[in-house]
Amino acid sequence: MDVSSSISRRRFLTGRGSSDRADPPRIAVSDLCLARSGVSCMACRDECEAGAIAFRPRLGGPFLPEIDGGLCTGCGNCVSVCPSSAIVLASLDGDRADV
Image (cartoon, rainbow, N blue to C red; front, side, top):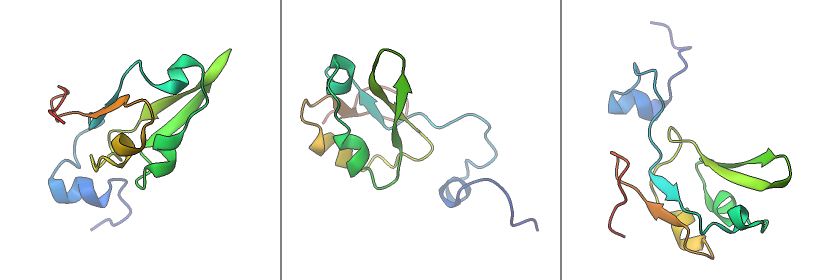
């Protein structure tokens, strides 16, 4: 058995290791995000233990949040720390969950 495969342990255990498409994010970031308003805020990234939130640079503006659905566990730590309440939990089919 080849143990050098590139799937994560979580993907293997949940049976989603053979899929080539990325998992949908378990959180959604709305336009209320301070970074989208020109304010440098990365509180959600700093709180995310899984490293699922990264801020990518863009020309002429602040870094914007990007969610890696494969790393996001849906724990909600980023939701509680967001100063503008711009982050909500999303269901697995992409709809907003009742929070």
